[in-house]
Amino acid sequence: MLELYYVPAGSASCRVRFLLTEKNLPYQAKVVNIREGEQNSEAYLRLNPNGLVPTLVHDGQPVWESAVICEYLDDAFPQPSLKPADPYQRSLMRNWVKYFDEQCQPALIVFNWSIRVSPYASRWTDEELQDRLARIPTAARREAWLRAARSPYTEEERANALKTLVGVIGRMEVALAQHDWLAGKAISLADIAAAPFVWRLRAIAADEFSRPDLTALNGWWERIAARPGFKVAFDQEFTAHKN
Amino acid sequence: MLELYYVPAGSASCRVRFLLTEKNLPYQAKVVNIREGEQNSEAYLRLNPNGLVPTLVHDGQPVWESAVICEYLDDAFPQPSLKPADPYQRSLMRNWVKYFDEQCQPALIVFNWSIRVSPYASRWTDEELQDRLARIPTAARREAWLRAARSPYTEEERANALKTLVGVIGRMEVALAQHDWLAGKAISLADIAAAPFVWRLRAIAADEFSRPDLTALNGWWERIAARPGFKVAFDQEFTAHKN
Image 1 (spheres, each protein chain N blue to C red):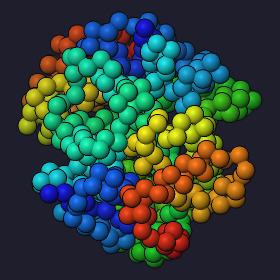
Image 2 (image 1 turned 135 degrees about the vertical axis):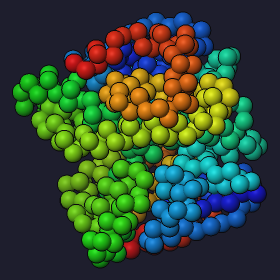
Image 3 (image 1 turned 120 degrees about the vertical axis):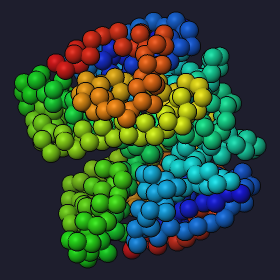
């Protein structure tokens, strides 16, 4: 049995739900309440010591980190495969996933948390904030919550984050001009990792997408938006993420 | 033909050299001069758009990011395999690698760069610094170089980084008390990723390693230090990394 602990709005959660649908895998859905700090509860930390969402539980065994969950699902349920057979294309796929996780995701936090998290986190008392921070296991997330609650990112920080996010567009256009999908001729985990960022970017930076030279990226968007996994992963209005 | 661009002292470079030896793969060694900024030269950025070291070039095709390079080598040259056959153990392996890359590596930069990088970077003129920063493609590395050159990490930041690094010890002891290697009964990419951090930690936090309860970790250290790859990867005195 597969169980997925996720947040409907989370880019990492969207990625895993997209993949589960593409692989025709049914799962029990467990929504985690981030605002209430459920991801840092003792019960959740026993499943996932980093206190991050999503977590997949397969026959009682927890798997965490969306990039690792996706590789796991492809290893454990190989058909249909979402990895290129060629080792070099596979390395391209993994570099795309790393790029989204390590460069784009932190930028999305800077850009988005002042809109989504600060409105409630800023109302916590000092005691409540300290209590919550003390239960966050990673330094990066402690910093993100502290910033959201007490010192929202500056305009300059937000501008730099947006620059990183908009950088996705140019990088993807170059790759997609060469082949239909990010890591070659077939859809792979790289495209599924890209989808949540492009989905958001199309709202955050709508002007950028009206550039007439983005034919490859816009073609890719049409292809990916037609996938069955897309409809499940992005079953909400994007505006839901703005407040 | 395999070519490896690396720095002898770099933890990511040590990881790849360790693996290449374990897999009996000969390669042409190309040392990158970090101090002179060779990693951000036009020629290097054509191989690796992130300007990070190492880069593997296999028959003219560049592969970058040490975690991706290691997976690539295991895909392209499957014997002997350094990945567990079981998908769940493989996910444990990948979580360890992510933990070292995303939590420990940034902490090592905070802890180590004021010793290794500040002495020369602080002497650059403002013009020279701006010129170098402008050529660094990732925000995280621009920040690290700027800090090293102009505002070395505070004692508090260094103490927090050391705390993260020392956290490796407890996490590894728990896992290794269950099985000989981090992801199961056989050595894997997780152990090879761990080696550079433990190697440094044994010097940075020598006291921690004299704790009598670290029998599993110390047993692991003896096993890994006996591997052929270890001798190649750590062919320098550790003290070389302190100045």
